[in-house]
Length: 113
Image 1: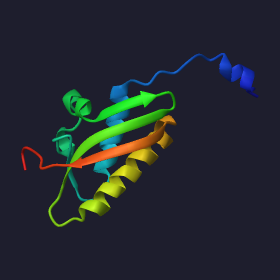
Image 2: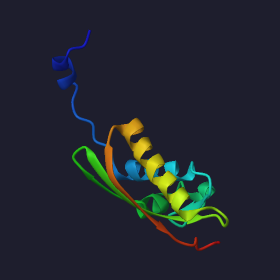
Image 3: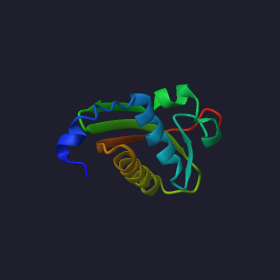
């Protein structure tokens, strides 16, 4: 059985900002109506440049996210952006245990749209 003392001796875990950005960006694509994140459609989002465009700031156990999304025509912007915020918050908590204090979403038109 592990005790708290045993857990403290395991070492520290560092998660790169690029990983946090990737999780946030991919979580946004799970929302119906999102056409692109950081100017990239889902099939090309895996590039490092796209991850760099989802800005994250990690302060202790808290994270702040700034991202841009392109929303498909006909979808409610307030509804989709709220769902993006909720999805990003949940993904960051469930996958890496960080509490997301803010998810700022800017609605833009994707360059290739």
